[in-house]
Image (tube, rainbow over all chains, first blue to last red; front, top):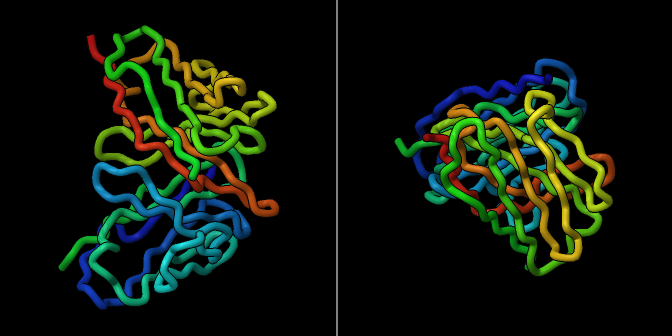
Length: 107
Length: 120
């Protein structure tokens, strides 16, 4: 199985901050990397596919980059509604694995 | 718009079979990959498997011996059956739609999830 490791596991930030979350794959997954946002008690929400392609309706303050084994999700200016847990997920090969999550909290 | 809704028992006894159904409304079940994903309380996400509308399936090897995912296209729904459950199968179970763009695919729509507790 491909292991997906996110860092940090948790992060405290303020509204207006720029934050970056890192996701590392245990082997190359090319650009088969997706991102999701989950708020407490809710289902995950799809944000980004193929590293950097935003789902329709996702604000442009979200962006993604990377290839191979190292990827990042950046939020350019945090808004109150962005405080949530973020998961990366590889779609390169089965089983399709997720990172352990990064919890973004208000400072 | 397309919506997914999970249904099934919230409590299952150890060694029995967990059975859930995902009803797809507002769109056809055809031409998408339909998955089950679970999340133990306070933990991360685990993909269980998918079924394509033709009936072809792919399961997580860690669960493959215990999982089946039948589809009923006439009712626009698909199901999860996980047998010989233990407390480790306690989780929120989500159904999700797998969409594609070129060679890429992703879970673009999710149900609200249903908590299944395994306990006697």
